[in-house]
Length: 150
Length: 150
DNA sequence: TATTGTTATACTCTATAACTATA
DNA sequence: TATAGTTATAGAGTATAACAATA
Image (cartoon, rainbow over all chains, first blue to last red; front, top):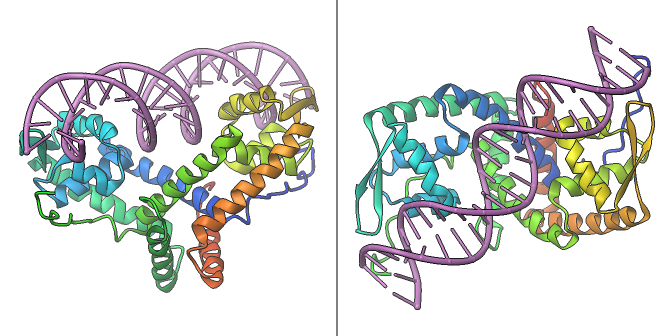
Protein backbone atom coordinates (compact mmCIF):
# COMPACT_ATOMS: atom_id res chain seq x y z
CA UNK A 1 0.00 0.00 0.00
CA UNK A 2 2.90 2.37 -0.63
CA UNK A 3 1.71 3.39 -4.10
CA UNK A 4 -1.19 5.31 -2.58
CA UNK A 5 -3.75 3.45 -4.72
CA UNK A 6 -2.08 3.35 -8.12
CA UNK A 7 -3.80 5.06 -11.05
CA UNK A 8 -6.55 3.12 -12.80
CA UNK A 9 -5.84 1.27 -16.02
CA UNK A 10 -7.27 2.19 -19.38
CA UNK A 11 -9.82 -0.47 -20.25
CA UNK A 12 -10.32 -0.44 -24.02
CA UNK A 13 -12.36 -3.64 -23.92
CA UNK A 14 -15.09 -2.40 -21.63
CA UNK A 15 -17.10 -0.93 -24.50
CA UNK A 16 -17.41 -4.25 -26.32
CA UNK A 17 -20.67 -6.06 -25.51
CA UNK A 18 -18.98 -9.29 -26.53
CA UNK A 19 -16.28 -8.79 -23.95
CA UNK A 20 -18.81 -8.05 -21.21
CA UNK A 21 -20.71 -11.15 -22.25
CA UNK A 22 -17.54 -13.19 -21.99
CA UNK A 23 -16.70 -11.86 -18.53
CA UNK A 24 -20.18 -12.35 -17.12
CA UNK A 25 -20.42 -15.82 -18.63
CA UNK A 26 -17.02 -16.84 -17.28
CA UNK A 27 -17.83 -15.63 -13.79
CA UNK A 28 -21.23 -17.29 -13.87
CA UNK A 29 -19.76 -20.57 -15.10
CA UNK A 30 -17.07 -20.58 -12.43
CA UNK A 31 -19.70 -20.09 -9.75
CA UNK A 32 -21.91 -22.81 -11.22
CA UNK A 33 -18.96 -25.20 -11.39
CA UNK A 34 -18.27 -24.58 -7.71
CA UNK A 35 -21.90 -25.23 -6.82
CA UNK A 36 -22.02 -28.43 -8.87
CA UNK A 37 -18.77 -29.75 -7.41
CA UNK A 38 -20.72 -31.23 -4.49
CA UNK A 39 -22.38 -33.53 -7.01
CA UNK A 40 -19.06 -34.30 -8.70
CA UNK A 41 -20.46 -32.95 -11.96
CA UNK A 42 -19.08 -30.32 -14.30
CA UNK A 43 -21.49 -27.82 -15.84
CA UNK A 44 -21.32 -29.67 -19.14
CA UNK A 45 -21.92 -33.04 -17.52
CA UNK A 46 -24.79 -31.61 -15.49
CA UNK A 47 -26.52 -30.09 -18.49
CA UNK A 48 -26.09 -33.35 -20.39
CA UNK A 49 -27.64 -35.21 -17.50
CA UNK A 50 -30.64 -32.85 -17.49
CA UNK A 51 -31.11 -33.30 -21.22
CA UNK A 52 -31.04 -37.08 -20.93
CA UNK A 53 -33.43 -36.90 -17.98
CA UNK A 54 -35.86 -34.81 -20.02
CA UNK A 55 -35.51 -36.99 -23.13
CA UNK A 56 -35.32 -40.64 -22.04
CA UNK A 57 -34.44 -42.96 -24.89
CA UNK A 58 -33.02 -40.28 -27.14
CA UNK A 59 -29.78 -41.02 -28.94
CA UNK A 60 -26.39 -39.59 -28.07
CA UNK A 61 -26.14 -37.77 -31.38
CA UNK A 62 -29.41 -35.91 -30.96
CA UNK A 63 -28.67 -34.92 -27.37
CA UNK A 64 -25.25 -33.75 -28.50
CA UNK A 65 -26.61 -31.65 -31.34
CA UNK A 66 -29.13 -29.94 -29.07
CA UNK A 67 -26.34 -29.00 -26.66
CA UNK A 68 -23.88 -28.04 -29.43
CA UNK A 69 -21.46 -30.70 -28.23
CA UNK A 70 -19.43 -32.61 -30.79
CA UNK A 71 -19.99 -36.34 -31.14
CA UNK A 72 -16.33 -36.96 -30.42
CA UNK A 73 -16.56 -35.07 -27.15
CA UNK A 74 -19.85 -36.66 -26.19
CA UNK A 75 -18.40 -40.18 -26.01
CA UNK A 76 -16.20 -39.71 -22.92
CA UNK A 77 -18.81 -37.42 -21.35
CA UNK A 78 -21.53 -40.09 -21.51
CA UNK A 79 -19.03 -42.74 -20.44
CA UNK A 80 -18.33 -40.75 -17.29
CA UNK A 81 -22.04 -40.42 -16.54
CA UNK A 82 -22.45 -44.14 -17.11
CA UNK A 83 -19.49 -45.02 -14.89
CA UNK A 84 -20.99 -42.82 -12.20
CA UNK A 85 -24.14 -44.91 -12.41
CA UNK A 86 -26.30 -41.98 -13.50
CA UNK A 87 -27.02 -42.98 -17.09
CA UNK A 88 -27.46 -46.25 -18.90
CA UNK A 89 -27.30 -47.02 -22.60
CA UNK A 90 -29.71 -49.34 -24.34
CA UNK A 91 -29.35 -50.59 -27.88
CA UNK A 92 -31.60 -48.55 -30.09
CA UNK A 93 -30.69 -48.80 -33.69
CA UNK A 94 -27.78 -51.16 -34.16
CA UNK A 95 -25.48 -48.27 -34.73
CA UNK A 96 -26.87 -45.95 -32.03
CA UNK A 97 -27.59 -46.14 -28.33
CA UNK A 98 -30.59 -44.78 -26.51
CA UNK A 99 -29.72 -42.88 -23.34
CA UNK A 100 -31.75 -42.84 -20.16
CA UNK A 101 -31.21 -41.92 -16.53
CA UNK A 102 -30.94 -44.60 -13.87
CA UNK A 103 -32.84 -44.14 -10.62
CA UNK A 104 -29.72 -42.53 -9.17
CA UNK A 105 -29.45 -40.39 -12.27
CA UNK A 106 -32.99 -39.10 -11.88
CA UNK A 107 -32.31 -38.22 -8.26
CA UNK A 108 -29.10 -36.47 -9.29
CA UNK A 109 -30.96 -34.61 -12.03
CA UNK A 110 -33.45 -33.28 -9.48
CA UNK A 111 -30.60 -32.06 -7.28
CA UNK A 112 -28.90 -30.48 -10.27
CA UNK A 113 -32.12 -28.65 -11.13
CA UNK A 114 -32.22 -27.20 -7.63
CA UNK A 115 -28.56 -26.19 -7.73
CA UNK A 116 -28.98 -24.54 -11.12
CA UNK A 117 -32.13 -22.71 -10.06
CA UNK A 118 -30.35 -21.38 -6.98
CA UNK A 119 -27.37 -20.42 -9.10
CA UNK A 120 -29.51 -18.57 -11.60
CA UNK A 121 -31.26 -16.73 -8.80
CA UNK A 122 -27.93 -15.82 -7.25
CA UNK A 123 -26.55 -14.42 -10.51
CA UNK A 124 -29.60 -12.91 -12.15
CA UNK A 125 -31.34 -11.88 -8.95
CA UNK A 126 -29.23 -8.74 -9.27
CA UNK A 127 -31.67 -7.75 -12.01
CA UNK A 128 -35.35 -6.85 -11.66
CA UNK A 129 -37.88 -9.32 -13.04
CA UNK A 130 -38.42 -7.01 -15.97
CA UNK A 131 -34.70 -6.77 -16.68
CA UNK A 132 -34.34 -10.54 -16.43
CA UNK A 133 -37.08 -10.97 -19.02
CA UNK A 134 -35.46 -8.40 -21.26
CA UNK A 135 -32.07 -10.09 -20.96
CA UNK A 136 -33.59 -13.41 -21.91
CA UNK A 137 -35.29 -11.82 -24.90
CA UNK A 138 -32.03 -10.25 -26.09
CA UNK A 139 -30.05 -13.45 -25.66
CA UNK A 140 -32.64 -15.41 -27.64
CA UNK A 141 -32.48 -12.81 -30.40
CA UNK A 142 -28.71 -13.20 -30.49
CA UNK A 143 -28.98 -16.98 -30.78
CA UNK A 144 -31.51 -16.71 -33.56
CA UNK A 145 -29.49 -13.98 -35.21
CA UNK A 146 -26.58 -16.24 -36.07
CA UNK A 147 -26.20 -17.67 -39.53
CA UNK A 148 -24.39 -20.81 -38.44
CA UNK A 149 -25.16 -23.07 -35.52
CA UNK A 150 -25.18 -21.52 -32.10
CA UNK B 1 -34.20 -38.73 -43.87
CA UNK B 2 -36.27 -41.85 -43.22
CA UNK B 3 -37.47 -40.71 -39.79
CA UNK B 4 -39.66 -38.06 -41.41
CA UNK B 5 -38.08 -35.26 -39.35
CA UNK B 6 -37.85 -36.82 -35.91
CA UNK B 7 -39.77 -35.21 -33.06
CA UNK B 8 -38.18 -32.24 -31.33
CA UNK B 9 -36.33 -32.72 -28.07
CA UNK B 10 -37.47 -31.36 -24.75
CA UNK B 11 -35.11 -28.54 -23.85
CA UNK B 12 -35.27 -28.00 -20.10
CA UNK B 13 -32.29 -25.63 -20.15
CA UNK B 14 -33.76 -23.06 -22.49
CA UNK B 15 -35.48 -21.20 -19.67
CA UNK B 16 -32.24 -20.51 -17.80
CA UNK B 17 -30.77 -17.10 -18.61
CA UNK B 18 -27.38 -18.43 -17.51
CA UNK B 19 -27.58 -21.21 -20.06
CA UNK B 20 -28.51 -18.80 -22.84
CA UNK B 21 -25.65 -16.58 -21.79
CA UNK B 22 -23.28 -19.54 -22.00
CA UNK B 23 -24.49 -20.56 -25.45
CA UNK B 24 -24.31 -17.06 -26.89
CA UNK B 25 -20.90 -16.45 -25.34
CA UNK B 26 -19.53 -19.76 -26.61
CA UNK B 27 -20.76 -19.12 -30.14
CA UNK B 28 -19.45 -15.58 -30.08
CA UNK B 29 -16.05 -16.70 -28.80
CA UNK B 30 -15.75 -19.41 -31.42
CA UNK B 31 -16.47 -16.89 -34.16
CA UNK B 32 -14.00 -14.41 -32.70
CA UNK B 33 -11.34 -17.09 -32.44
CA UNK B 34 -11.84 -17.92 -36.11
CA UNK B 35 -11.54 -14.25 -37.07
CA UNK B 36 -8.39 -13.77 -34.98
CA UNK B 37 -6.74 -16.89 -36.38
CA UNK B 38 -5.45 -14.85 -39.32
CA UNK B 39 -3.35 -12.90 -36.81
CA UNK B 40 -2.27 -16.10 -35.06
CA UNK B 41 -3.76 -14.80 -31.84
CA UNK B 42 -6.25 -16.43 -29.48
CA UNK B 43 -9.02 -14.26 -28.02
CA UNK B 44 -7.20 -14.16 -24.69
CA UNK B 45 -3.90 -13.25 -26.31
CA UNK B 46 -5.61 -10.58 -28.40
CA UNK B 47 -7.33 -8.95 -25.43
CA UNK B 48 -4.07 -9.00 -23.51
CA UNK B 49 -2.35 -7.31 -26.42
CA UNK B 50 -5.02 -4.60 -26.50
CA UNK B 51 -4.65 -4.00 -22.78
CA UNK B 52 -0.88 -3.69 -23.04
CA UNK B 53 -1.27 -1.39 -26.03
CA UNK B 54 -3.62 0.85 -24.05
CA UNK B 55 -1.46 0.78 -20.93
CA UNK B 56 2.20 0.95 -21.96
CA UNK B 57 4.58 0.40 -19.06
CA UNK B 58 2.02 -1.27 -16.83
CA UNK B 59 3.08 -4.39 -14.96
CA UNK B 60 2.00 -7.90 -15.79
CA UNK B 61 0.18 -8.31 -12.50
CA UNK B 62 -2.00 -5.25 -12.98
CA UNK B 63 -2.86 -6.15 -16.57
CA UNK B 64 -3.68 -9.67 -15.37
CA UNK B 65 -5.95 -8.47 -12.58
CA UNK B 66 -7.87 -6.18 -14.92
CA UNK B 67 -8.50 -9.11 -17.28
CA UNK B 68 -9.21 -11.61 -14.47
CA UNK B 69 -6.31 -13.74 -15.62
CA UNK B 70 -4.24 -15.56 -13.00
CA UNK B 71 -0.57 -14.60 -12.64
CA UNK B 72 0.44 -18.18 -13.31
CA UNK B 73 -1.45 -18.19 -16.60
CA UNK B 74 -0.18 -14.76 -17.58
CA UNK B 75 3.45 -15.85 -17.73
CA UNK B 76 3.26 -18.13 -20.78
CA UNK B 77 0.74 -15.81 -22.41
CA UNK B 78 3.10 -12.83 -22.25
CA UNK B 79 6.01 -15.04 -23.26
CA UNK B 80 4.15 -15.99 -26.43
CA UNK B 81 3.43 -12.34 -27.23
CA UNK B 82 7.09 -11.56 -26.63
CA UNK B 83 8.29 -14.43 -28.80
CA UNK B 84 5.97 -13.22 -31.54
CA UNK B 85 7.73 -9.86 -31.36
CA UNK B 86 4.56 -8.03 -30.33
CA UNK B 87 5.44 -7.13 -26.75
CA UNK B 88 8.62 -6.30 -24.90
CA UNK B 89 9.36 -6.33 -21.19
CA UNK B 90 11.38 -3.66 -19.48
CA UNK B 91 12.62 -3.84 -15.91
CA UNK B 92 10.33 -1.77 -13.78
CA UNK B 93 10.67 -2.56 -10.16
CA UNK B 94 13.30 -5.20 -9.59
CA UNK B 95 10.65 -7.77 -9.00
CA UNK B 96 8.27 -6.69 -11.75
CA UNK B 97 8.39 -6.01 -15.45
CA UNK B 98 6.73 -3.24 -17.36
CA UNK B 99 5.00 -4.35 -20.54
CA UNK B 100 4.78 -2.41 -23.76
CA UNK B 101 3.98 -3.08 -27.39
CA UNK B 102 6.70 -3.13 -30.01
CA UNK B 103 6.08 -1.32 -33.31
CA UNK B 104 4.82 -4.61 -34.73
CA UNK B 105 2.69 -5.06 -31.63
CA UNK B 106 1.04 -1.68 -32.11
CA UNK B 107 0.27 -2.53 -35.73
CA UNK B 108 -1.14 -5.89 -34.63
CA UNK B 109 -3.22 -4.17 -31.95
CA UNK B 110 -4.77 -1.89 -34.56
CA UNK B 111 -5.64 -4.89 -36.71
CA UNK B 112 -7.07 -6.68 -33.70
CA UNK B 113 -9.25 -3.67 -32.92
CA UNK B 114 -10.64 -3.78 -36.43
CA UNK B 115 -11.27 -7.52 -36.27
CA UNK B 116 -12.99 -7.19 -32.91
CA UNK B 117 -15.13 -4.28 -34.04
CA UNK B 118 -16.22 -6.25 -37.10
CA UNK B 119 -16.90 -9.26 -34.95
CA UNK B 120 -18.99 -7.27 -32.49
CA UNK B 121 -20.95 -5.75 -35.34
CA UNK B 122 -21.50 -9.20 -36.83
CA UNK B 123 -22.80 -10.64 -33.57
CA UNK B 124 -24.64 -7.71 -32.01
CA UNK B 125 -25.79 -6.15 -35.22
CA UNK B 126 -28.70 -8.56 -34.91
CA UNK B 127 -29.96 -6.16 -32.22
CA UNK B 128 -31.20 -2.60 -32.64
CA UNK B 129 -29.03 0.19 -31.27
CA UNK B 130 -31.42 0.53 -28.38
CA UNK B 131 -31.31 -3.19 -27.62
CA UNK B 132 -27.52 -3.17 -27.81
CA UNK B 133 -27.39 -0.37 -25.26
CA UNK B 134 -29.84 -2.21 -23.03
CA UNK B 135 -27.81 -5.41 -23.26
CA UNK B 136 -24.67 -3.55 -22.27
CA UNK B 137 -26.47 -1.98 -19.34
CA UNK B 138 -27.72 -5.36 -18.12
CA UNK B 139 -24.33 -7.02 -18.48
CA UNK B 140 -22.67 -4.22 -16.53
CA UNK B 141 -25.27 -4.59 -13.79
CA UNK B 142 -24.51 -8.31 -13.65
CA UNK B 143 -20.79 -7.67 -13.31
CA UNK B 144 -21.35 -5.14 -10.54
CA UNK B 145 -23.90 -7.42 -8.92
CA UNK B 146 -21.36 -10.04 -8.01
CA UNK B 147 -19.96 -10.24 -4.51
CA UNK B 148 -16.63 -11.75 -5.55
CA UNK B 149 -14.41 -10.81 -8.45
CA UNK B 150 -15.96 -10.92 -11.87
C1' DT C 1 -23.17 -42.52 -49.35
C1' DA C 2 -24.46 -40.75 -44.89
C1' DT C 3 -24.74 -41.45 -39.98
C1' DT C 4 -23.36 -43.26 -35.25
C1' DG C 5 -20.12 -44.02 -32.03
C1' DT C 6 -15.42 -44.24 -30.99
C1' DT C 7 -10.35 -43.27 -30.41
C1' DA C 8 -6.48 -40.39 -30.76
C1' DT C 9 -4.70 -36.02 -30.61
C1' DA C 10 -3.94 -31.23 -29.74
C1' DC C 11 -4.87 -26.64 -28.29
C1' DT C 12 -6.91 -23.17 -25.22
C1' DC C 13 -8.30 -21.68 -20.84
C1' DT C 14 -8.28 -22.28 -16.13
C1' DA C 15 -6.79 -23.58 -11.33
C1' DT C 16 -3.55 -24.74 -7.57
C1' DA C 17 0.78 -25.41 -5.38
C1' DA C 18 5.41 -24.33 -4.80
C1' DC C 19 9.58 -21.84 -5.63
C1' DT C 20 12.64 -17.53 -6.11
C1' DA C 21 13.40 -12.78 -5.68
C1' DT C 22 12.14 -8.38 -4.17
C1' DA C 23 9.28 -4.70 -1.60
C1' DT D 1 4.85 -10.44 5.46
C1' DA D 2 3.15 -9.37 1.02
C1' DT D 3 3.91 -9.05 -3.80
C1' DA D 4 5.81 -10.28 -8.67
C1' DG D 5 7.06 -13.60 -11.68
C1' DT D 6 7.80 -18.23 -12.75
C1' DT D 7 7.34 -23.33 -13.25
C1' DA D 8 4.95 -27.53 -13.02
C1' DT D 9 0.85 -29.81 -13.16
C1' DA D 10 -3.85 -30.99 -13.70
C1' DG D 11 -8.43 -30.61 -15.41
C1' DA D 12 -12.19 -29.11 -18.41
C1' DG D 13 -13.78 -27.79 -22.91
C1' DT D 14 -13.30 -27.91 -27.68
C1' DA D 15 -11.64 -29.05 -32.47
C1' DT D 16 -10.22 -32.18 -36.32
C1' DA D 17 -9.07 -36.50 -38.41
C1' DA D 18 -9.69 -41.16 -38.91
C1' DC D 19 -11.82 -45.62 -38.26
C1' DA D 20 -15.47 -49.45 -37.88
C1' DA D 21 -20.17 -50.65 -37.99
C1' DT D 22 -24.62 -49.74 -39.63
C1' DA D 23 -28.51 -47.34 -42.26
